Image (cartoon, rainbow, N blue to C red; front, side, top):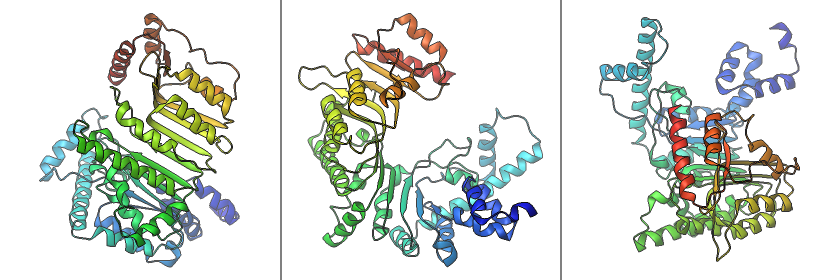
Length: 460
């Protein structure tokens, strides 16, 4: 201990930068010399959830001058605990049922753990109920007003199966897993409005809904100007709009109009954020059946925008015309350095059949990328379908070679661009490869095999 205390403060700060939140909390309690060092990293980010206890903790940080001046980011977690256990006996039964496959431990240890979890559950439920009595917008505005150096906001959906391994924010804090809260119930617009007067550099709006984008147009002009000014200052924008197609029934004209209205609002949002250097857009995942007519307007709206300083681009779960996607990427080639593509469906435009192969070749020939990442499904729904997964060991797959090829780090064409026999496909599944290129005349055959493989993976 005496040796580390004599290290320069700058070295201690670098060490603390590699510690997680729990390690930083413990480090603050080791010695008073570490208090400032650990606090500098620990309080850079505040996590809140729809819970009065969570907001009270955040307010206690914001009330202390030496802590609030360190806060640079606020993360709003959507998850809620389910009010599903009326008493301890019901809670204990579910707790032990979920852990039936665990390694046998001392019974007294398990009993103490379940009692502790139950007390945390009761406290959390109390905080959720009392939060319903508060005005959420006022709580967020009061918190934001006390954080003078706020630069970043994020929204995140905590949704994991109850009693499983706790990896979400709420679960780690109280010992119980959170459940979905209807994709935020409009909490992203509330958070954005509360911090619109700050000089935000980064906005990460994950797990939001289409109606969440309507707040700029549906507010008084004076407020709308504030929101637009805030968007123009952004350098980093991440948006994850999930369950996009499930929110609309496209058989009804009014739902089609509502959907197109929401897509237009996405365009407005992106257009105002004109100074971006990083843009990440995720629209969940491609449905098993093609919805190109419904999803194509999304890509068309995106491709009409241009960001002169864009360096990092991520596009996931979009349907697009091949030529439009290539032109969009080509327009950003002077600045673009990193590209991430996932779940891409190329839609036929006229008589020309789109090709995943020519798309990749165009990316290689046109762009000068430092890094490229691919994941998910790539298809034209006619005769080409790629399936890329990252769950398996990469030593026997082509994914690394393909990414190196696209970023000009490897001159060799990946050895997957050819017809693959049914026997070879079966071998690929058995070996657990996570990149295949299937050039079949009938996409439905590939889709059936892809579905069967996913079922096999789940069984494993």
